[in-house]
Length: 158
Image (cartoon, rainbow, N blue to C red; front, side, top):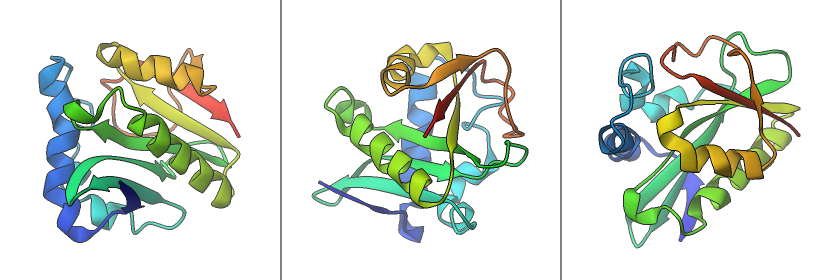
């Protein structure tokens, strides 16, 4: 398996991987990454300064992604852990932890001091992974992601 930066040709595959869990877990689609128009063009989104999207690939098949993005309105020195999704068959094998740690390392290299994440209770396995990685729950959202459907907010100091 390799972890590499997003390529333009990845856009459709990644959008499908990102949207699949919302159907699988009957999670809200409005006010989430599911309906976010940037989900269909991640390559261009991650050309933004101080951002990166990592893609996991094995034998030419994209297995998932995870990135760091300077979401508008976050405190100075804070980035958001974003677009963290895996194919169903790739979950529970340590790949998510690898991608998340790769992104956390990138956040440090990009000069961030904190990482913020938004998620949903339907993705409780992911919430547990975030907690094990040192993320702590917040009472309110930070920044302006536009994902008003998310109701779990977490932060990690680097």
